[in-house]
Image (tube, rainbow, N blue to C red; front, side, top):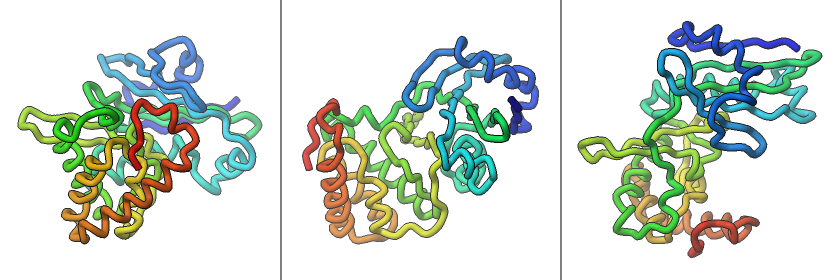
Length: 252
């Protein structure tokens, strides 16, 4: 087995600690996610708290596509994309390292390491909240999404769990994107932008607040945007096979 690593120069002092990540990942850290991929929060030297995501072994044909460099592996993209987002003013956790293991020349497990976002909420919390509780948050999210799309950036897995947020001392909402290995860079039309938000949780009223804020920020017709997202949202949730497992009732 061959192991290689790309490291953010800022964190070169962690190199020796990071080099042992594949061997210690299973036994150390606090697991916060475990489905196809596994995510752990780990304490690093110097008091740093890191988020470590281990990507599952890619199946054929992706194993060949990634290994031959025909397309960059997910963890590699997650390590490289933050630079583009941060330079455009779109926040995402700072990348620390990308670690890749290969067996017989083919990518095996790989790891993406970033700074853990502490004291952040996710948009899942909107699920059963009232309009009064979340109106300001959803309006701010609409404005943030518009700013991202105007910067020619679109998160292709724009779901509640991939949007972190917090409020600063001045009452301003701040957002940060995670799980950014699937991105598209280029012009985002009104229809594409509305479709991008169709997976958001919350009541129809809250979704309307979000999309109207989005439309105002981008200079689009608010009624047209609301009609577009409601159609896209209805189609998505009607066909979503696990909707009965959601902690709230979808009002489509």
